[in-house]
Image 1 (cartoon, rainbow, N blue to C red):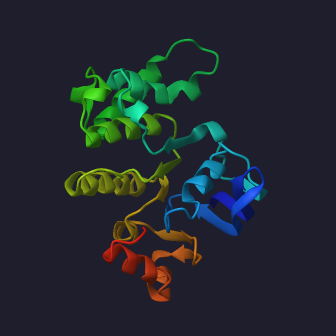
Image 2: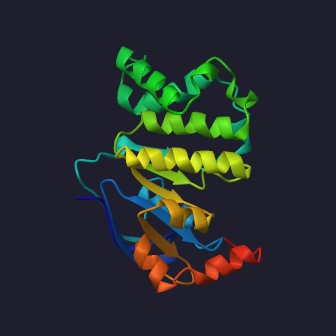
Image 3: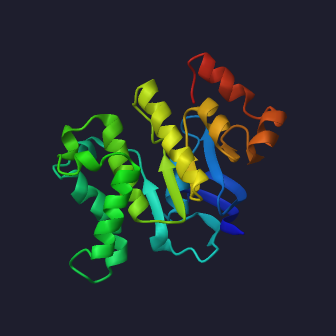
Length: 237
């Protein structure tokens, strides 16, 4: 069953489209990677899917009982977020805010959920540490745990491994793949086409050449050949 359906979507700013005529669907349990050249509108598309900005035209439909406040989101980190003076536990707990409603405090169940997601991400021992004192990889685990507190159904990730070294990148990709194996639907923007093709079930390519379908169909189509070539040659990802 489709958890997300996009029909004839155009996205952009101030009614100026950067992407048009986009249609695709995401089923519960899918792992969709969004790839394309730099500047092709990947992040703009994700923000539009999340409702953070309005579409220029078209429809975005949620299915399978999904509500807007049940979506987890890990955006690209800013310098301010990396230097935020809060403990790991405080940041992870903040992912439960959408569950609180008008309550000015976290419930016992929400605190337990935060503890479970810290354990899931292997950061329980860091719970009292200030997040800005952690490594980049540790910070991403913290933010991923926070995003998990907001959802049990679908997680959106915008280039979650940007700026991380190869070892930490591989570990984070494996964490994300394990979440998908556990039943969480993943929608991820990736600058690493090789990793995307290895781990995902479906690929949406935007930009100069458009594709949507299964990983197997993508590999057979050759749609991403120029992206692979650009990667090898140091061009845009």
